Image (cartoon, helix red, strand yellow):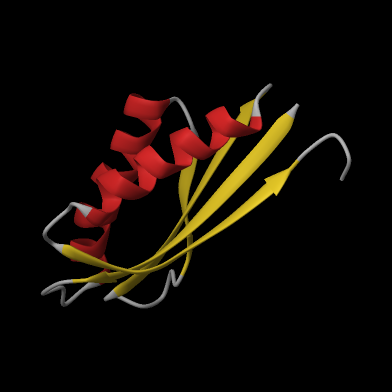
Length: 97
């Protein structure tokens, strides 16, 4: 069994409140969950209104599949025009860890 995680550090566009931030981040998290059957949540920068850290996790029997799913998740988030993807960090945990 393999567990892969992805941390997406996002810079949000013209956002002036935490309420506006939620209106952008929640649909992103919901789309990732729905399209890719992953665990996803806003996991950092909770008190900043122009930054967000979205965490994604996937569990599978194949490491390559985990990588493909995370590639797709990163691609979907990066393609959104209202945000800038500042960084993406990955980790893979396997049977030898």
